[in-house]
Image (cartoon, rainbow, N blue to C red):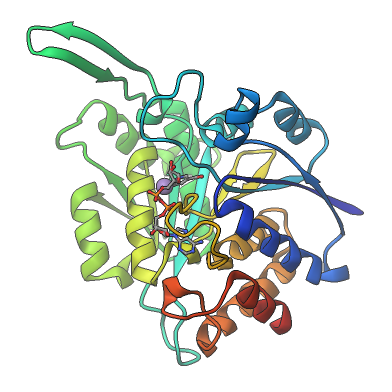
Amino acid sequence: RTKLRIGMIPADGVGREVLPAARAALEALGSSIPKTEFLDLDAGFEYFTKKGVALPEETVSAMKNDLDCALFGAVSSPSHRVVGYSSPIVALRKAMDLYSNIRPVKSVSKTPGERPSIDMVIVRENTECLYIKEETMSLGPNGKEARATRLITERASRRIGQMAFETALARGSSSLLTIVHKSNVLSVTDGLFRETVRGVPALPGVDGKYDAIKVEEQLVDSMVYRMFREPQVFDVAVAPNMYGDIISDAAAALVGSLGLVPSVNAGDTFVMGEPVHGSAPDIVGRGIANPLAAIRSAALMLVHLGYDGPAKKLDEAVDSVLRRGDVLTPDLGGSCTTDQVTAAVLKEL
Ligand code: NAD
Ligand code: MN
């Protein structure tokens, strides 16, 4: 690559406040990555209220045809039904077949060399489960009856399983993979997920490469319990879409803030970085959103494109700002602004 063409989709709320920080951090990497070209793209609820569409066709076609990767901010999806509106991030994951959402959660140790109290990667299935949004309403003897379809397929479970084993392998041959499910209750759907992921090491072509990875299972409710009690035991966890969503926010609390946790939505041909947090309406417009999750998402995107060295530089800059602890946003107990924290990261770079 001589150029890196990056789509920027700030979307709504604090997404617009943190994405410029990610851009500035990428630009500060200079010639250690190919020349960056940023393309601003529309999506989101605010765009929907103006134009009647949440994910314009041009955004999808630019991602399919003109870009190497993208960064997404956050969307504001209202809790009530809005006719014609559907979350663009869910649609985008589907349109680009970004079937995995990879979410590293790591605390920064104060003393160099000390083992962080949590250092895990959540591998979340990104295309199905309850998030296919097949919901119906009918009238029955008990009044309104609302139903949702929960889809788990063998194909999606297998490929997220493969992604999880590969993620575990990349973290060292003796890593631990925890399969998160609730198949004591949902024996058909979660049963299929669990069995399919368990079957990955026996697939043709694997040839024993996952043999040293220890595989465990955890019911999703006790997973949350154990994450709070003994977060240090977890390494890689793989989960269906909704459980993955929920345990990620729980894990974010363990490192101190949602404003710290990055992710990438990855498929076989495209990668899109995205902070785990939402549009944070409670703090929007005050200039105090934590930009570190967005910057870390840019780093993670670089890892997935094969630029490990520059990604490491970004991560180290973020870590040293956190370790120093004097330039932090209010979510971490500080009193600094988004711009001040971004400037501190750029200075480290
Ligand atoms: P949220 O993640 O937006 O906020 C939860 C809490 O975390 C809030 O107190 C918020 O202030 C804080 N927070 C989040 N990001 C932060 C940051 N960068 N710096 C400092 N503090 C931060 O979740 P919510 O309040 O449940 O949802 C708000 C909106 O976001 C909803 O409309 C929801 O649909 C949407 N949402 C979007 C995504 C996404 O775009 N992928 C994810 C989650 C929620
Ligand atoms: Mn979420």
